[in-house]
Length: 175
Image (cartoon, rainbow, N blue to C red; front, top):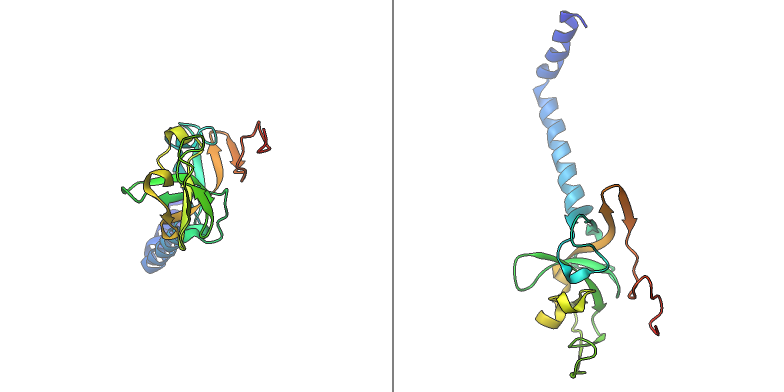
């Protein structure tokens, strides 16, 4: 490339500063909309969702189309704002408005049940012994749902999330 051609390229870029600013603005707006209303990624952390998610090294892909509880079903994994602090958690939906759910961990003495109120859902972790969930802070408002977990990412491995309420080795509730 000769000096004149190189200078012409720089001149073209610098000669149209508004075009560059407009392109940068469009790119930033698209990026913001994509991550606000499209998808979001976050690391899986903590033992509350074992064995579904690993403790370290696994990332979650969250569909923001399902924020505020839109089109979520029992068994879906959701990211939500934890009601008792400022963190974001991931749990499984066990009950939607009108459903009856147990207040305590199955197998304990208390067999009390509660009907999930309108505008709320009941969420629990897959590892009941290590999970702070609706058994701890009660029904979660659907407005706190940030999205539905649709996939997991590990280094060199991408996997869609299945909606099943039973462990992989154990597909039926009778076992």
